[in-house]
Image (cartoon, rainbow, N blue to C red; front, top):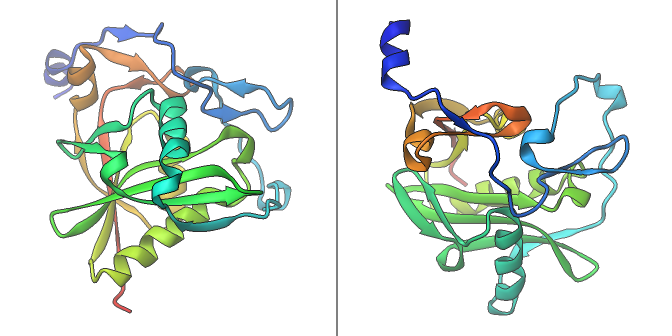
Length: 212
């Protein structure tokens, strides 16, 4: 089986792709970090930073278009995102935003596919991470699915993105499928992702939504 897997996937990895902007911020020195330079540490619950940012979450309006384009551009360089074997345009989705002092600090974009709510993109600016923004946006998305009468919320994460895999599973999502080699095939080779881990596979998770 191991030999077959090696034959199926090209082990070549591209490690010199520049991301549009840093994805994370170091909590110790406040340095903004590109994905492949970020690292994880393990800590106890008592030493985790407490949520300290005042912000609100609401549905996006037409006037938020520029800010949505900007966060998409800084996160991925575009508003079109390929997940679940389809290309979604964030600008055409139903979007939730987090804002503080009148400025957008986080975005969660959704669409409906196969009778379930799909999280197309969740992005929080690095300087606002670790303050409960992503969790609040995710709760709002679950509420949105419940209000729409949809039975589940789905999300796709690259295999290397350990922080997001941790985040979603901590919030009730469970892995149900892996599209092996999909990301490597799409890019032509595995790309160095979080902490230099080769990004090859699309990991799919789902959370059931209880009826209101």
